[in-house]
Amino acid sequence: LGDHTLPEGKLRYAGYVRAIEDAGLQADARLQATPSGQTPEMVAVLQSLLTAEARIDAVFASGDVLAMNAVLALNQLGRRVPEDIRVAGFDDIPLAAYFRPSLTTVRQPIAEVGVAIVNALAAQLAGDPAPAAQLPTALIVRESSA
Image (cartoon, rainbow, N blue to C red; front, side):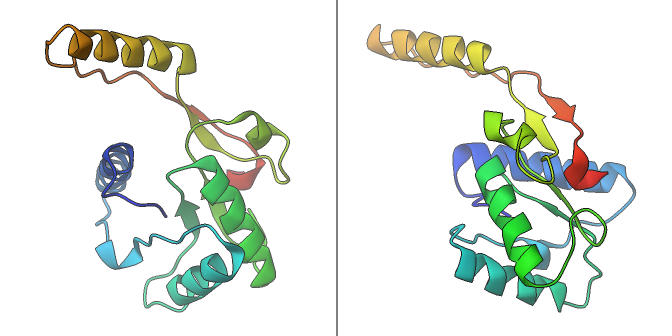
């Protein structure tokens, strides 16, 4: 779930596709959706994905808030997380650890992200091209994917 036309969404979607392919599976673009995160729309999108030909046993959202909304929508659809469907997000926002079930997520090094953004801005202000930076992430496994 997420808008992979945005720069960070595009990279996260590429990582998702690479992980699927590394697992020996084929990524199916029909299973990608861009819900707004509003509950009625999320319910409709997930209902559509759950009735697709493919068997869905997990949801990866490009952000933690989107993942949390997916958990709430799945509950409305009578699906239990993680028993029926596992859910993971991205960012490791503080609420992710306290949400129920606690959210599996990909943690970014926020302090280093801030430094990279400041460096890019400083370069642009000096008339230089902004340096690209790809920082390491870590998978934080919690209850939503147990």
